[in-house]
Image (cartoon, rainbow over all chains, first blue to last red; front, side, top):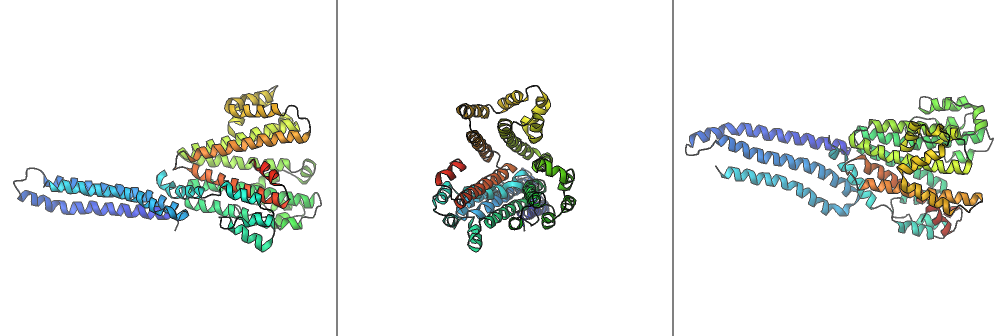
Amino acid sequence: MTAYAFRRKVHLSLVLTVAVLVATAFVFTPSLAAAAEEVEAVDYNLAWVCIAAALAFGFGALGAGMAISHVGSAAMGAISEKPEIATNALIFIALAEGLVVFGFITALMILGKI
Amino acid sequence: MSRVSDYAFVNAKLRARIGIMHDSTLFDEMIKAPSLTEAVAKLEGSHHANLLEVYRNTGDLQQLELQMLDDEISLYREIEGYLPSLPSSFISVLLEKIEVDNVKNVIRLWYSDVVRQHIISYRSAYLYKKQIVHEIDYDKAVNAVSFPEFVHAFKGTPYEAVLDAFSMERLASEGLFPLEIALDHLWFSHLEKGIEKLGGIDRKIASQIYNTDVDLKNILMLTRYSYSYHLAYEELERVMIPMGYIYKEAEKTGALKSDDPMSVLSAIVRHHYPQISEEIQRIRRTADDLTTVEENNREIVLIEAYLGERRKHEYKKILVGDPFSIGVVLAYFFLCLQEDSTIRAILSGKYYGRSEMKIREGLGL
């Protein structure tokens, strides 16, 4: 498989991941919204909070996926020629991976407000 | 697909390869080696180790050079496979240059055989006969007894039309030079079209690299022919590569048809490349007292070496530029060719028993 075909597959899986995330958000939002109606003391729209959390995590994951696809393919290219730089390359991949962690923490903070 | 995703993998790979390219220590050891066999042995453990194997099996320097050509073609094909369609088709155009040079070798062999009546059997064994870009029957071409039969071996390729414009009589009277120039011009026209097809920043970078490259070749051509051989200006126009900033401006201003074309051309060179112009003048001034042909040739060698350095500088400049463009690929090819030609020069120097100093001088070290 050429690098080009490999990248196409990575992009395809990325698109599928986003689709699953969006579908999940739509499936769970109505039930959470219904739960919100039951909790009268809460004075903000629970549905919007959940969407905000989903977006924070979803876009974080999307950004991380895109970054890893680029950094990862560059790292693979460089490592294939110079295996001794594998550790350095992994640090850069981990930096990109950090994006999804930020998104996750933001989502947790938003959900913590409920 | 974005430029980042198009080039991230291949450019990181090539930059890593550039990082592990041979340093001057290997070349130095090869130059210092007391014999050709020992010079080749220095390649052990390097990415040219396969050459050592070929030399051990055949003991033939020309077979080794043939292997180097094969490796070069494989390298282009490998990079071609890593790139998306547009830059990949541009690499095919670059590969065509190797084919044009191979076609020129076939023509020289055939010409030696049929026109000059020389024995070519030992030389034809060193001809690269595998397909490079177009399907050409090299055996049929070399063994052709007439020019039409020779041209027929190139049927269906872009070279057919160029060859068709010549005849046996013309080749016998004018030699191969006009035909070789016509083939070079054909490739440069393909190169220009290839650059046009590239998109955005790639087009800009490739155009800048090749226009500057052609300018440096044209400057050398101007220096060499107008000074050493005193060609007529009509001929000069014919031998100049019809590409690059100098040629385009000369064409626009009608410089080659003016009363004093050389001074107009010098002004154009001075305008585009003030440093080069100054350096050439300096070399000429120091060689002013020289009269013999050999000393004139030395001046050309010095100018050639300086322009070679400038080419290297231009390509290195690309390496520090945009990391997600075709520039890195082109710079890598250039550095590989430089490395290969250095190895070729050292080995052939050793083969002919040249001294260390002579080899270094030839390499501009």
